[in-house]
Image (cartoon, rainbow, N blue to C red; front, side):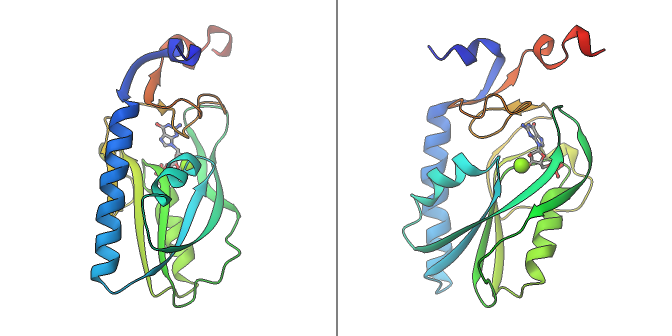
Length: 189
Ligand code: 5GP
Ligand code: MG
């Protein structure tokens, strides 16, 4: 057994459920673009959280794809945002006139995604769509809906499959909630 699993209070989305949903998303996304006459996509992944999801999803989209990343900072070593998300590293590819699919791990307040979509739009892509692995719907502070969502989840801080807590747990194959005593060690309070 993966020893990291012992740190979880519960699993919200299993490895099998993630695999199945990624297959479905790949089919849906491919079909939508082909129906719109689009055969080449530029994927923009938000690092680090979206890396694992992007790697798996990309291989289920049999279109020509270009890949670039945006690095954003909004969380430091805790479970609460430290403020407005900042773009600390932008894309290198030219997306003028291109079809962009932005991929991120989780939609929470909506601030990160709306900021990045806004920044990408200033580069004049032909279209821009968004795909989120997870959506914590009750938490939105900025109006933002993703075009594709893997799973809607309740308002809990989750880790695994790319999502971290203080840079740990990204390698977990499932998505879960870390035990409360590990999230808030007594020495922090
Ligand atoms: P938003 O800007 O929508 O509030 O937050 C989006 C970003 O916050 C995500 O890309 C992710 O990095 C981080 N985030 C939000 N909720 C969670 C969570 O439950 N777990 C983890 N690990 N990161 C989260
Ligand atoms: Mg993120």
